[in-house]
Image (cartoon, rainbow, N blue to C red; front, side):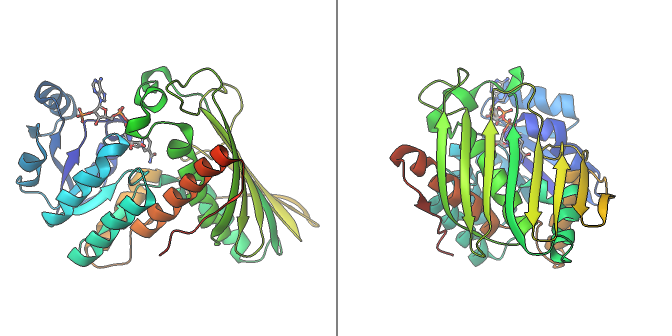
Length: 333
Ligand code: NDP
């Protein structure tokens, strides 16, 4: 079995990842670490987790095989390095760190230690995005020319904390959502971005100089151009992902989400066709791939390198928004 320790008594673990671990035939949640021992105990009690600890050392000396890191973003690096040093497999939340250089340090430490390292980019596990990727790879829209990502949401009240108040914790919509759009664009298009230009805004929710809205324009290696919109303040926008090619277009609606929902429409000279796709829970699939990787079968659905790519893209977007210039995306892998 794979015995998991949770680093961070977080919302995402409570809402999705504990269940996803337990959905695996061989997955067990053994321990949780919170910086506050009372919160650790309460969280363990509420979620049926046997061991509650309040230090990283205590967690890493528990009998566990893997850790899931879902603390605030400034903590991922130090916690990831410690877990790698202790020989634990690591599933780390995005962004992997505050800078791509730090992320690279962690990923290369994992490679040297021979442990499995994954980035929790859940969207590549969505049946909708996999159906789009397959349709494009099969040539169903001809040569892909342009993409549009609609990922501006309303940050729920219970999450209106560090994301909109704490720059030092890696707050802001770019590190929160643009990283996901970077990864999903790379996955669906099967291409890597080379350049980005971004405008960001503070539309009334985020403080501390943080951005709560962003619009980015991307150029990919093959020449594809894309636009993406990320936000925390638009209650009624809905989400979507479109790819337009020489022989057809894909329109995905309500797919930039944590749930296996939404629809994908293919339009071409023959008319319109609704693509059918798998509705498995995104996080359960992500964990299944991770467990397989531990057994030596394949790789996590999003690797450490994928996490470096998404963070390097977000970094470039933030730099572009500050300088008013287009910025090269180069993760130096
Ligand atoms: P939370 O704010 O729920 O948790 C982050 C940390 O905040 C926890 O580790 C905890 O610290 C502290 N905390 C949480 N609730 C409280 C509270 N009531 N009082 C005091 N402290 C509290 O963050 P999220 O779950 O939203 O995000 C965590 C990470 O996961 C981030 O890196 C984020 O980017 C990522 N994420 C990824 C998603 C995905 O789909 N891939 C979706 C959502 C988030 P402690 O552990 O010390 O108690």
